[in-house]
Image 1 (cartoon, rainbow, N blue to C red):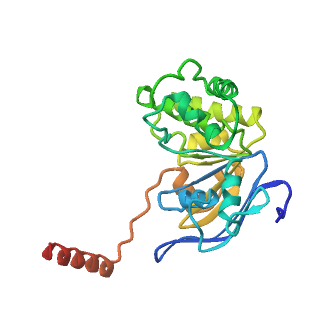
Image 2 (cartoon, rainbow, N blue to C red):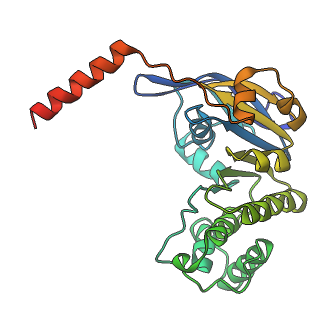
Length: 273
């Protein structure tokens, strides 16, 4: 299978996803161009994290197609998906470093799992990636000895150790102070310049999104509200987008019948404990 547009790295069509009976994604369509930084943002519960997990092949959608680098990951075999993931790097929100391994050992892990490179080459590649993320000299420390920003950079170094074609970030600035967050934004921009990589960032940090994005996709209630440039998003007339940009709270709508049903059910559970 080939991409419908050869300029795209990812093509999503009609993506529907459920958690149990609850519909999370409602027919999502999105093209992500090769070499761009695509930021996906939205309020809590908008479906952005589920969307990324589907693109990574961690969740299987109810229906729809996800073409990544010419492969529809909704229909390929487990072995093909495993091979495709070698071209994808992921930096998870908490870093997801193994606490029993040093920084260098964490970064080396993908090379040891997926290649037959000799020890000297692995050490050289690890050192190079540590320099890219400004962690040279910290390779022997344990994750517990790193600050929050250093953990994020170490996770980034691990995500690029295989020189991926696609790089996914899950809330890269979460939990960081403004200065460290700005440094991480600069690092992402430097990566874009230095590597032929397509970057997908899921975030709720507006300042970061506006700084790093080539385009932004805003999600709401499992649907895409708008995909456009930073300026197009900032100038959007869609009320939900303006609520998000200006941090305007929305009135919570509570269904009285549903609330009473849940309250009654909880009382029944406590009665039988």
